[in-house]
Amino acid sequence: MQKYFNFYVRVVDRVSDYVGIVAMYLIFLMVGILLLDAVTRNVIHIPLHWGIEAAQFTLAAYYFMGGAMTIKNNAHVRMDLFYGQFTPRKKDWMDLATIGCLLFYLVVMLFGSVSSLEYALETNEKRFSMWNPSMIPIKILMVGCIVLMILQTISMIIKHITSLLGKEKEV
View 1 (tube, one colour):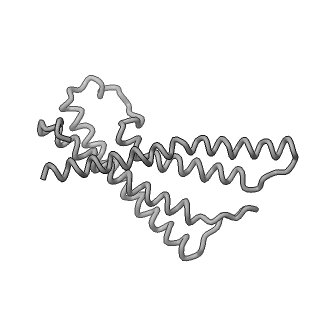
View 2 (spheres, rainbow, N blue to C red):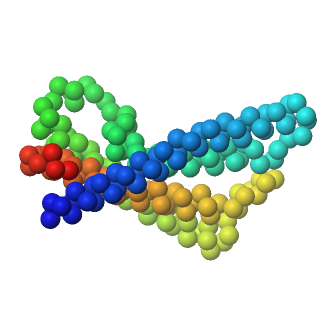
View 3 (cartoon, rainbow, N blue to C red):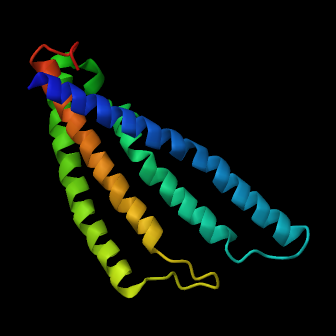
């Protein structure tokens, strides 16, 4: 059974890293879009109607895609008033408690995002603006990334339980 857990953790960690690396490069795309928008609007006086919204969609993709890697690398915000003084065993217990809350939150978000995606698919939802882009691609990405964050959260649970059982070198 342990080898299946090890395999699961390795695969999910690797996928989270790949998706996170793609997310890191989205910042350059967003900066490029905003720079192009600024130049066309202020220098050649031809405003792009899609520039700001494309940058907003890119930013949304960035933070959704970076979520799983942030969970994996423990790069999230943590109040370290007492946590830094805990023993590794107490840290594992505390992390398991907070990861339980995170998992609950992500499952609620998943239900909401799936409902939002269903609505977008049924109504061919578009953003009300001059550019009028479809909301379906960003909502599909949102659902996929929330699923990946849930999988990464389960991976973290496996890591902490394995650490509590004294088998941390295997995972």
